[in-house]
Length: 327
Image (cartoon, rainbow, N blue to C red; front, side):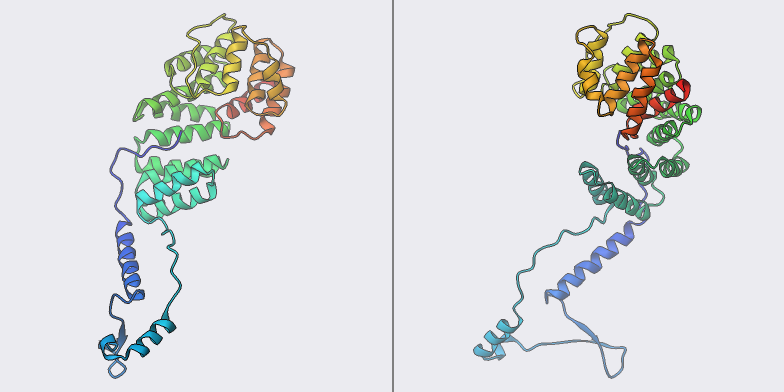
């Protein structure tokens, strides 16, 4: 879930520097284009500027005028895209970089945001999210800490920190932050993702009743993973549950396969084929092995999933916690 701006007004610290830079840049453009006078120090006194004047073209013979144009003509300039300067421009550039999966650029824009507005918690959330996507949860936690220090009711910062603490195996701390994220959530999406996080935290620790409660609260929100978790939690408890087996439109193929397999509509063949390359399919196949009580096989699939490097996926810390319990 991408960071949401905190509801408090953004800090204006740093905006004055951008405005001054913009004005200076405009002046430089005018001077370069010859639309503004060029100032020089008076060689006599050194403290009185004078304006350099040039003869009017009316006073110069036509042939000489043509020669001047010929000698000074420059190739047509290709306009360059100005670097982002305002907070909104930095945010737009940050989101564009994320869309291109250019995390280096995203971090650069987020860092510029923090420098421009050091008292705005949103900048730290942006930078922390980019670090999280780079699998640097240690740095991401530090940024989320700073965001929370600036705004103790910033729901997304608690969600981000909880997610990173989950990845690093600090489950109790992650659960406390996830519950704070529920308290301070700014909209239904933040509520849904926080409930889903709590569901996976409970599922990872074998608390399937708690997981069912959290996943059920998500309803049809989220990205389909909560529904898969709900079905798996019921199955781990030995319950034949087919509930409202409908997936959100954005649900992935793996979640759809798990639903069909649990409902008896399809075999495991497609999921097994997809799991050969690791990835989320290996995680879900491990869960099906656990439903059937095959722990040795489950460990093999969980290890394959961990090797595939999906560290920013919600299922990654679940697999890590399960391996600790099973080994």
